[in-house]
Figure 1 (cartoon, helix red, strand yellow):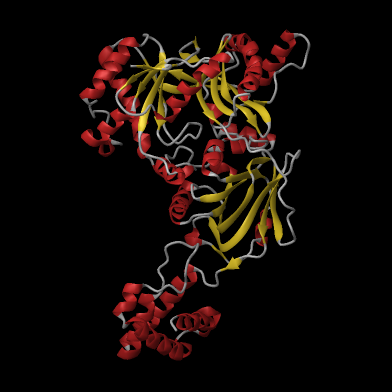
Figure 2 (cartoon, rainbow, N blue to C red):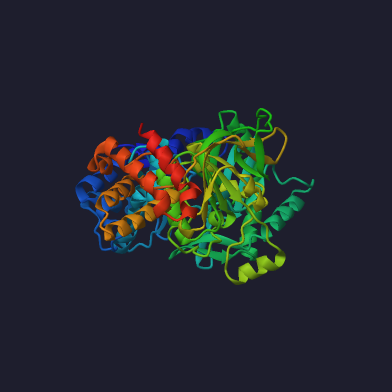
Length: 591
């Protein structure tokens, strides 16, 4: 059944991405922008896969998982409508996301004309899209935005031209009708994948620096000449090729007039609201493959920051700004597999914290850049503020990094924030990136812990964090309040003290001092368990263990015995370094 731009198969919803394209297609057409027609497999098919085929249990299994008959019949009809030798995008259209976040999977399919092979290849593409609904990033996303489970699939032909064994559009990118008050277009050569990840050149107006259009086109080509790599489609999927060929730059020249005209189209579109677009240009035609509404947050003066705050950093890469009451500060020293796993674990348990990460985490420069778990939404979904510690490279460093096949990313002037613009906008996370002196961190209030040598420093404090950007200013600043609520005992102190008390209990047990042994073990077993280092209540005893040792009256008796004898049984440097104070406060908390 035809609905707007798409032939729809199955019951249920088209998903937010396809719904947006259908809703805005007439408006886009009015300003001269085209939405490629295609197919939508509605969410009812996903529901049947989950309920009837136990699809989630097949994720990660071999490609021998067969396509169910109800979807095979749909795919057969779709393939018969496809053009042989044409590439098609197999896009997610989830119920929880309008697009632009990178949470869900999209793939590409080449129609070869061999029906059996094509049916299997199309099913494998669809499996990847459907499986992305069950990823940890998707689960974190739905929890953050209170979204529903459900996935439609959007299938559209890819616009472009053939070059040797590759297929690519001349130009593609993302665009905002207004980003911080300005029309903004990010452009790359080839597929839009690199632009979505934050690569490419940023323009706020047409390239009209000269009166002669030819001169303007040549200047534009020179701008793009340094983009020496482009994402392209091949029979094996997305690959990269060199771009500095006359054939490719000839196509860029053909698309230059359409690129310049895009700014006028954005201005006309803005009369109807603010929008985010993903686009491609082939010849004189601009195609829109994604369109969603966009909330442009304009810089505004926040109240003056008083002496009760200190400046943590100043940066030009500000995505969002405002005030946040953060419950804890996490600083990532370096990005490793171990650090990634630890941060993901902390993020599940902690809500509302300030996270500081190195540039390597966001750019893929990390040593484990081929690891399947890079820095993603599941690592920071519960943060209120994300700070990217950026760095610059000398020409020699850039040369060496290229020799080692490491990515060299420019994260200044909006490039860092662009990686997460869709995520941060919808998840209401403040973001700023910039270079800053690490010694600034010594000004952070409260006690710092270094859990298990995993490259993290954690401050268990409650503090107001301000990300401030002033009208007419490029720079933003991050302030942290000096007046904080500091928790007196860290979980790692409690853990060490419990270990000390256990050693004393073992010694007493060997000496057959049964009554005193019982009291020491009672305190050890009831002490708070260490689950994470933020929002840790050092006086919340294990209730089940408390009941096993006579309840509150029994624990008071055991604490009194430990306090009375601890000074004689425990090393003085440990006893006087907070353990005695903690036990007395714990005793007082019980009444």
